[in-house]
Image 1 (tube, rainbow, N blue to C red):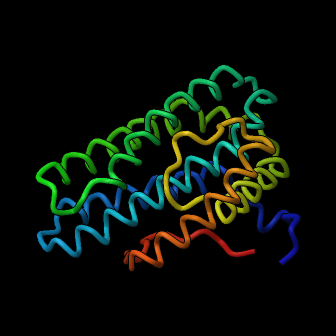
Image 2 (image 1 turned 90 degrees about the vertical axis):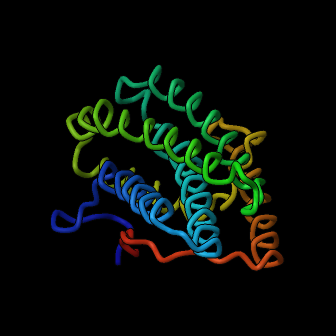
Length: 199
């Protein structure tokens, strides 16, 4: 498929962002319903991975266009919230599944993420849909999906959040490290309910 959308296959960046949010919502419901420790660990691994990828991908793509849309202050606010979320997700990533606080630590990270997600959906996404042309919306959606494939799969709260070259470089290094950690640790991941389009 061409990298440029046509009138019949334009992507909507707010839809792609919400899809990530909805995957986290679904995974969290499954986590809370699970009683088996291994199943909970698999779901928690997946939650951590999805929250880490989503936050960095937004910073490398979507938030860079916020100033053009009159949302420059909102981008700065979002990055502050992302920093808090990354710290909580990092804590979840480093807490043992056998810890008595495990469920609480995971829940705190996810509920903070979902509070931020609802704020984006309710307050920012309507503005984005109104101000982005179909072509620019499609371009931003594809930039977001491309960024998702480039960023680390685990949280790195000390990494830059500039959305520029420094964050891309740190992300490339982090991605390699995360791949080693996940394989060495034999991490298992759950299937996602919602899938992004391939292009």
